Image (tube, rainbow, N blue to C red; front, side, top):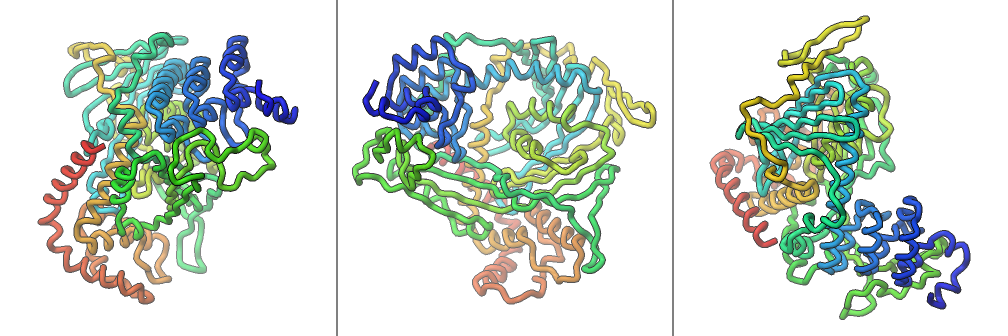
Length: 596
C-alpha cells in the first residue's frame, strides 16, 4: 500500500475504502475485498465529488479495475453530480476497449433489471382494479422542418389481473423517419416470471419471449459491434435533462385583468384544474474533448444562427489543459488524494480525467398540467406501473416518468404538456376511460356504488390463432439510448437544414411560437388561442389569417422586422418548395448518418 494512502486522515480512510483502492490502483486488494463480500450500498457510495468507485475507475481510465467492479455488480447506469453517465465518461477517455466493456455490462444490467422488474410490476398491478384507458401522445415543434416530422399516436392500454396489453402504431425513430406499424405488446405475469408477446398485426406474426436471466459467462452475446463503438468515439457526448430544482406549480388564471380567477377546463368530460409549472429548465450539455480536430469542426459546422432565435442560451466551458500537447492520463492536474477526498478543498477548474470541453444550452419552458379530482384511475397504483413498463423501451415514457414522479399538485393528470428536447414538446392526454367515449371490444363498463369500473375479457390478451409464432430473437431491436440519439440527431439536422434554406421563413415561424405580442386587454383564453394557431401554422405549414398582420407592439429590432417582412413575401412560394425541402432533409440525414 502506498505511503500517500497511509498518510491520509482516518476519516477519509473510513469513509471511502473502495474509492481509495481504486485511486491507488490496488487491484488485488480490491479483488479480495469484493470476493469476501461488501454491502451493495458501499459499492454504490458516492465520494464527495459525486463519483461511485466504478465512475472513479472509468474517469481515471483504469480498464481492469472497472471490469472487476462491473463483474461484482457495480451499477453502470449511474450518474455523477454533473449528470454524466458511466458510458459517457468511458467515451471521454477515448479508450475503445474500456467503452466496449462498459457497454456490454450496461446492456447486461438493463436486461437483468428488465427480467426482474417486469414480473414485479405486473404483480403490483394485479392488486389494482382492472381498467382500459387511451393515452394520446402528440409531438409538436415550432421549427418548420422538425414540425413536419412530428407524429402523434394513441396508446391503448388494457389491464386485467397481472396481464397488460398496450396497442401502438408509433414504434420508434428509425434513421430519418418515425417507424410506424400496428403492434400490440402483451405482458403476462405468473408469480416471479413474465412472458412478453409482441404481436405484429401487419405481418401477422407473434414474437414470444419468456423472460429469464442470462449467465454472466454469456455476456459476450451483448458485445457491441466495432462500428457502434467507433460511432460513439467520433461523435459529441450529449445529455438532455429537466432541471427540476427550481420548478414551482401555480394555478393558471383566466378572465380580464381585475376579474381574474383560477382557470378550469373540461378535458374528455372531466373538469380539470389547470396548473402551470414555471422555471422548467431543459438543459442540454455537449462534450467534445475526445474528438479529433476534424470531428470537432464537423460538429461546429452544424450550428446555425437560427438556434439563437429559439431562446437557447449557450455557454461554453473549456477546462485548461496542463500542456498544449495533451496525452490522456487519469489525473493530468496532479490532484492528490488528500485534496480530492476532502470536501472542504475547492478544486476550482481542476478535475480528474480528460479536461472537459463542455457546451451547455439552457432553455426555459412552462409545462402545463390539467388535473382532475374525479378521474376514476389511480396514478401510483394503476398508471405508474404502466409508465414504468413502457419506460424500459421508450425514452419518451422515461421522460414522462421523471416528470410525474415529482411532487405534483393533487389530482389525476388528465393532460400533461412537457418538453422532450429543446425544440420538441410532448402533450399526453388520457381519454376513453373504460371505453366510455367509444366502445372497445372485450371491455364492459359497469357502475358500483356510484363509481364506474370495467371488466376486461381475458381474450384481449390472446393473439389471433392464425398468426405465426416466432422466438424473441427474430424481433426488431432498437435500444432506448440509440433511438433517443437518432431523434436528437434528426432534430439537429433539421435545424441545420432550416438554416440553409430561406432563413426569413424559418425565423418567422420560430417567432410565432414565441407568441406575438398581444394587446394587454386580451384574456388568457384569447392568448392561448393565438398560441394554438401559431403552433398549428407550424405543423401544417399554413399561415392563419389572424397572423397575416403583425399585432401592434413596441417596435422590435429592425433586423427582425426585415426578417418578418421577407418571410411574408416568401410564404406563397413555400408550398412549392416543401417537397424539395423534405427530399433535401432526407438526403442530408442519410449522408450525415453515413459519415458518423
